[in-house]
Amino acid sequence: MTHGEQHVYHLALRDLHSQAGAVFGLAQGWSLPMHYGDAEAEHAALRSHAGILDRSHRSRFLVTGTDALDVLRAVFAGHVEDLEEGRAMRTVALDDTGNIRDLVLIARTGGIAYLVTGEAAQRFETLARLESAVQADWDATIGDRTETTCMIGLGGPAAQDFARQHLSEGLPARLDLLHTTTFEFHGFRTLAMRTSDTGEDGFELMVAPAVAQHIIETLRAAGIRRGAFTGRNVHGGARAVDAFDAKADALAALAAAGAPIQTLQIVAGGPAWFHPGRSGTIQLGPQNVFGHFGELHPRGDLTLAIRQDQMRSALQTLEARMDATVGTRMRESGSIDFGAAPDADGEGG
Image 1 (cartoon, rainbow, N blue to C red):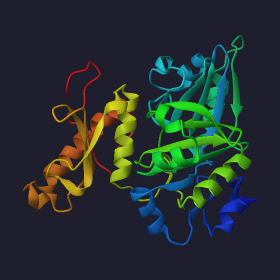
Image 2 (tube, helix red, strand yellow):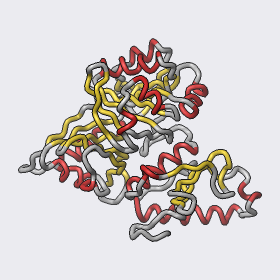
Image 3 (cartoon, one colour):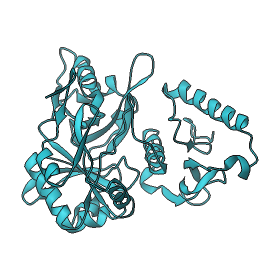
Image 4 (cartoon, rainbow, N blue to C red):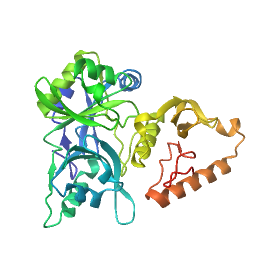
């Protein structure tokens, strides 16, 4: 099926979503559930309880072989060589001018085996870059598993409890943030990653379509709501972002910089110029603050007596610094304060 001249991809579990009352829309070349009749309630459930997300539109590549690491280093930024088995990291693919082309999660699932998941809209560009990075005498294989597997997300404050009770009793106990492992779900092998790009705690499970349906049905029977499509596209339009997106971006940036995110604390609230109910502080104890995230106070100019031109100048300076280092601009609708984050040499900025 096509949409104009664009090919439209469909989820393997589309029929299951349709039976649940999904309203579909086109996003990043895929027909995806936008909501199931009550978008606000579904969003609230994810923030306060738990939600199920079908993330199968995201690209999934298996990179294997004794030269797999060299392939990844040729395509992605960051210290991929430091990635230990059973660990995952967030990073980016950059073009020759330093612009971000894809936002990815790389998980080392075995000694010479890696899983790369990225933006749906960048799937074929990233696949081509990976394939072109393989030299003639290298031992490396690139496998596209986007259409033959499913990626199911379980996110929200209660995600860990539901995973323990209904997926695997041992899974939460041994899986820290940005760790990955395999476990048995009703006799089927399942790859689990402790991560979430919704800003909440969560898991992403890569499984065969039949197993994915069983997982969704199991979690639905336990009382978890389905969640709407929440993805963002670095090269296209996206939904409005909120403080949870800022939180997810901040943690992803710190993870890419090598910060000890497993031991970081997230505390509600931030400086006075942030919205009191839509902001937070990232810290290692009360005396070691990494930074703040969230939305600016809607009346920040009155609260702090800061003129608009001063605020605009500060944001332009921050954007210029970010352009010089990562080649992309911060979203206008989000705000991340890295004023206390360490520099590359470990000293404060």
